[in-house]
Image (tube, rainbow, N blue to C red; front, side):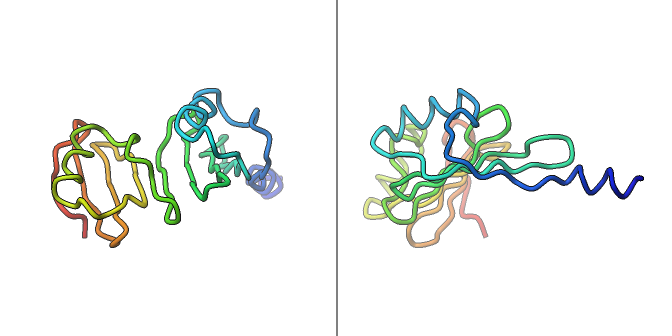
Length: 137
């Protein structure tokens, strides 16, 4: 009986194109920041007690991960790059000054700040208020 319960608890992830499957906050974030792109797919990753995260793939190559409440966790685009408008102003200013010819391919929200990956694969770490902390190993 326990084995049957555990097996049914690990339901398969769901893949859909239905925008209604993601929280309103996630939908609003996409509309505000990626108005020209369309949603290609939404993967709803489940875990034992519910939804773990939403992974949204857009037609411009952008992949966005959202937590269960619809807050973004990571934005990645290695083709068209991550828009600079998504970065906190101090991070954007730091990149323009120190890496003017580089593009952002990934932006991750961390517990204590942000991690920015450049097109050179260099990963830079910033505080929540945008102060540069260093290079991630």
